[in-house]
Image (cartoon, rainbow, N blue to C red; front, side, top):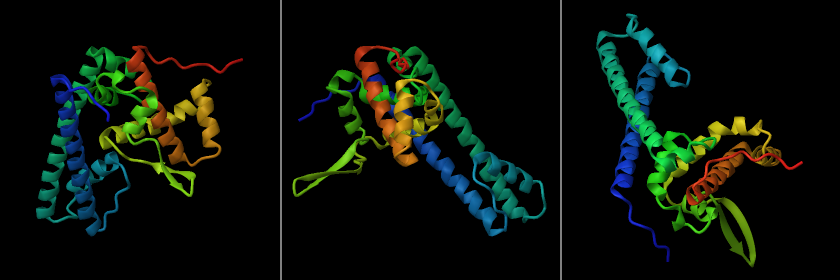
Length: 235
């Protein structure tokens, strides 16, 4: 049986902020998809990306090609989109300020792929890193380790378990995907490991493996109160 420490009021507040921001992100995505559907019904196909959708929406609001009622509706949806952007930006600024003042979060931001958003979410969820005996326990808690199936005494490793905190797992995978191109070009041990893995595995598998590695490194930084250092290859 695993026992965990009770979260402090600060940790609970930070987790609440992350949940509210995640809900706003979902609302904005749903709103953008609805705008795309309305434009598609009228023959306007918009490429992927928020910037391209915003530009196309601004152009159509200036043209009389769409009925006045639909243009009014799209203008209202555009205003709501800007309001959601403002609220999300406010949360992001609050997370950046928290990452600067919290020592544990500041140590995590020294690692590639971990920004203020990921750092504050990890600190709020993990708390005391001594709860986990080793880094793999944290990776397993986040559902980033392979799922093992044993048949006839022969173990098989399948995809990741996807157990635990879905939000943290998603944020780590997104951070790993963003940091992967830079780390692949690095000369350290982490870059060499990633290049070797990329030569024999799918790109999505490499991203998830890097996310699991980041979880282990985050545990080490929190447990031993150290900053991240890129180790060079041995001569």
